[in-house]
Image (cartoon, rainbow, N blue to C red):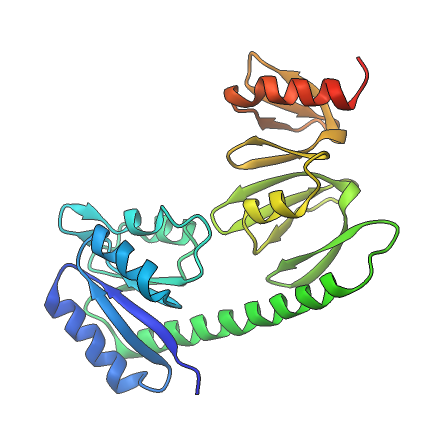
Length: 253
């Protein structure tokens, strides 16, 4: 039977023991605790060593911060549940795509519900990954399309109609021509940078990928790019010359 591989990161031994005790009593069939850590450094080393499915993470790790544990993992393969005595960081936790935010002292029912949520998310992601693998093995149509995994299912999108993509953590927002709403995909920006043709899409900023065909104006004084639909995206100062050279090569001036 499959069990979630779990690590516990908390600077207090009593808190780690209490969490392990609840997991043993209420979630024994669903989780396997592979290790513990009490600092940012030891936590990162543990995660890299055991490759967990789920990380229980405290906000305060002595003088350090729990968010520092996950900020170096650009596209983590693990889920995070914050377990803390501080209720002031819930919004920040969900901005980094935490599954849940549990307050100490832990309530077993809340912990069980959070574990169930992780399992459901894992099952959904496995299904979407399987569908993507099947789709990538199929012959391509003349008009190239890609499958976009979202919380609602898989969206089939014409590559040519993708104007720009904005990344935020493990998710990306795709802006499509002639569509009133954007598509939020459960893949990070680096995934789409590798997937899409580098001669057509350009990484204009740490969090932005742009289709060269939709660029209207480069605005150097504003460090931004104006698109044909009237929107603007940021342009890194270090990327200005590279983008200008690329456009000069692609389009006759």
